[in-house]
Image 1 (cartoon, helix red, strand yellow):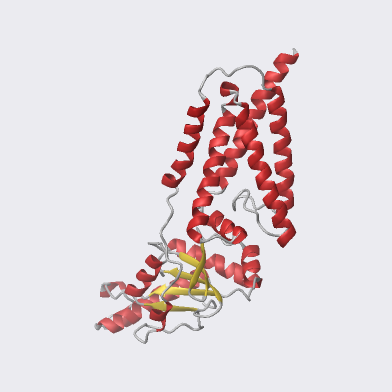
Image 2 (image 1 turned 30 degrees about the vertical axis):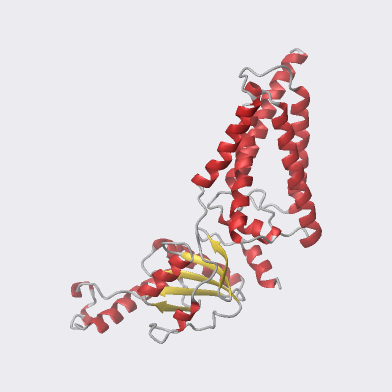
Length: 336
């Protein structure tokens, strides 16, 4: 095989590999939601939540754009795209080095989101290897591309890709606070067993009949068994009494008043929920429907389970799809 043929094969192989890695890296920052990556940016750069969400989408969009352009490198052969990818990796590596010097090698740097949790030093090594591969790609790139796109048009496509991130991954408007005062109102079915208005807690909003809520509760139980110091708290929606008498057990068939029906329904659903999840030892209490829904909406959500890291009444982070990162929780609870 001639040298020209070897270089051509190497060029195509490296462009596909590097493009795929950039696209995969961008995708991991969106799965299962960009919220985790937003929090990583917020905690590492100490910028407000809204701007951390903006920066997260900019980073994801740039990675996607560079990935697609690298995949098509054998058609475009734009060396400045390779140089841009190298510069981005250098910027990432400088940040990782500073992160390592400030917090050590334990934090998840967010390079691969929460899909592959990477620490600073392995991430720097990954970036060095990718930079090396890109420099080889730069060296073996010869001639003009088969598709002669003007540089300005390529830049425009990149900007469109970045802008699309704000459409595909819209920034969710959310309050940074929860109105805890209503939780302690005497009209609530129960008062919280702990004072959530002070300190750090992981607060969940669940309904007794929700399958995803049960999965989340089981995960909380599993984590709590290994880390009994973790301050979990569960708010449950007070069940409503709109049920037929024939769905009740025989010994309660004579109950006719709304209060008695409600209590029976609560007992039935509660027994089934806690027998299934084994979560009875997790501190919990009921909220009336209006406040339960309002608090979820206030957090920027519209369904259950809604799981939030809370410091006093401030929302620090949202847990998506009950994906709990134990190490992150430990670091958060230890932080001053």
